[in-house]
Image (cartoon, rainbow, N blue to C red; front, side, top):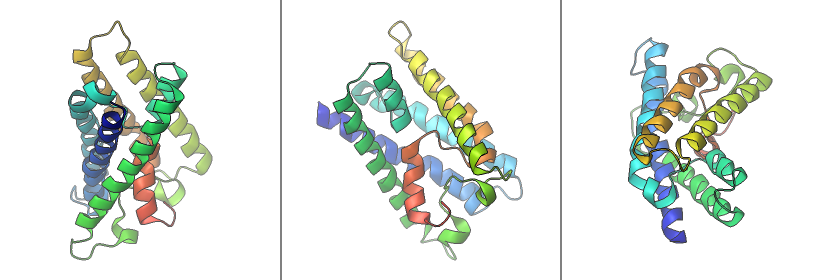
Length: 206
């Protein structure tokens, strides 16, 4: 059972990064949304929310579908899981984020003229890497608030007295919502595993 949960978290995080960060890369790195940044923001926000919604129902019965170290931290603090299981999840999530980013990079780099520095890989950032030029302090503040909102939504939607049938919808919409605000500010992390993978590959300011 322990191994199944780790595999589910690894695969889920890898898929989240591959698909949703892939949309971010296509929208902003390759500019498929043209000159409309707002279209890229909406497309990316929806991709994160929809992928997570799908994964909630696909792997939720196996591992709970955390696929986010911050969510796992929330479950640990709420005493819904123990430290050993949390560590298993964190390892699986970070590795999944890295592998998902590697696969995405392998595909993106086959595009003519692709450059890690020019096209990126949906990495988060502040300063010049922020659409609105948010500095480090502002970026940290934004990520703390957005992550807290998202983790609260996940914990609330998965309480024992709530319906599992609607939890995935609530969680997916919550992730979409925080991305609509967060993308212009920092690119939106609210998920360390999602940020670590692309950052390792893009390097530099990422």
